[in-house]
Length: 523
Image (cartoon, rainbow, N blue to C red; front, top):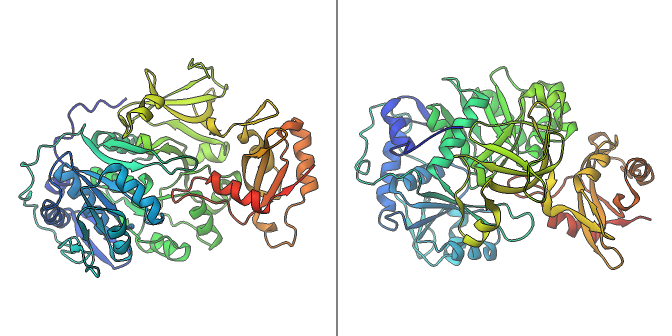
């Protein structure tokens, strides 16, 4: 466990700029620009001074509706410096979804960019500031928050006019981040600076840190998976390379050209890199793959290609990683996500909340300094927390060596004809068939049985071009051999890829819609 107490005593960037001012902090992979920690610190101070005209204290909430870019990083640290709560919003969501979230958190101001300026004005009743030149009435310019500026500066940091004047509290709510919302209403998670720092320290203990590390961020910064590398790189004093959009060919080029030593990906991104012919250079130390389970096929392809894959399990509520497997463990046991990090403690409990033995499935309960103090809603917090900690809703088990396996979600359990079905068990049988790469198993409403088991399967890469890539008779025969009859899928559909949220989690509602529209009912 990591005792943090009142540390850190000031914002992470100010501390880093005073310690290693000349070290490269941010590299813009798309514009070939670079900022040292001293230059980036000055830029953040200027952005904070601009923002202070619309937000000014710990009770204020600043929305961010922009994609992955250095300006997002500047806004993040400016919010930390001002002590305001930052609320990252998903640029891919509909105006109705964004309006509901903006209203729920009661934003005091919203920062946007050119592509989101019109939406920002439509969904939020508060001052709007753009990091690009505004094109709509009602949107103001954020000034030095734009991308240009002091590339490559190497002088000493001036510590800035704001540092020392704004009281810094590591336990104050620093972020409000919405969960992916794969089923039901997304929850607004409160995270403190202490949470994100504890997570970063735990990650360092697992992945290691080298002075020349360069972490590529090509995930959305409005998700924890894209924001965590920014916090970690600043805390470690290493370099973050920012790529605005993932593209398998372009990202492979950046990985090689910029001598990337670490990258965060979701499984689909890793799969697309491999399909594009990518092989890692000797510089790459780790490819952190999370947001969704990495399939056996993907892990085997990484082994063959020499990719140092680190399958990881985490949550927004834990400020990113809970457990991470090193490559040797992943190649030996593709189902494992490794041991818990030092920033969390994991209990596995039964339906009564009592701990279970190794090898027995139960719900994962997480505690420690990386775990959120709760949700924006007190009722949601009361539902998810007890004396043991945060009830994740995820089902898994621990092996004799302490490594974790994640099976699925408690709420995903299917009740058909009074019998309980674990979707993970059905998925494992389907994916064990040679023609199946991935599968999602859900319950569909059924007049006779209450729910029926349904599966959306992705054909293996070698079979996707076939006219009939899935032999249903063979697949269902495999199910008959290994599953009770009530667990056998009664509706099956195929897809080139499973529908996922922006963070990479399977979108179960979208799976159900696809199966209702295109699934085949089987006897």
